[in-house]
Length: 141
Image 1 (cartoon, rainbow, N blue to C red):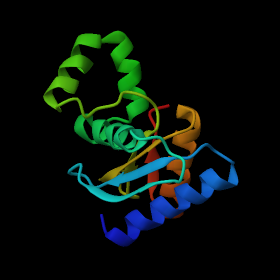
Image 2 (spheres, rainbow, N blue to C red):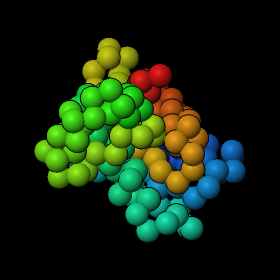
Image 3 (cartoon, rainbow, N blue to C red):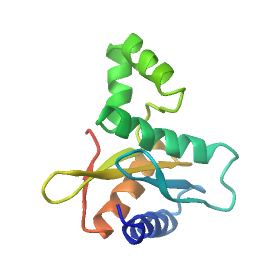
Image 4 (cartoon, rainbow, N blue to C red):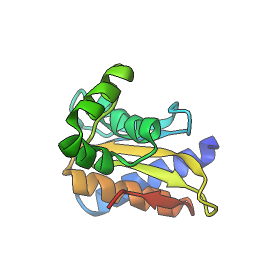
């Protein structure tokens, strides 16, 4: 993912959050390898919101499914998700707000993770950022 694309996603997600008066967010955009391409923590975001945002996106990349789907899977296969959390060094966060990014052909481009408001609102901001970049959001819903 190009840095310009990551910045577009981040900025549009941030703008959506402010337009909807969401709580202060941390927003992370990761490439398909799980490397952070862009990140912000808004003024007032609590200390570990960034870790949670990155963890939501990282888990989505690690398993190839959105963090919402990982959370659903955790309810049915707790041992599997616990094992994956162990394998990833505890970097996965199985809660909605980690959305896969795909191009028009369906190829994985990266993931966005947001934390700070409700998981539903975090996911809404993710999707707004992805759409602004002309890409496709995969939420798992």
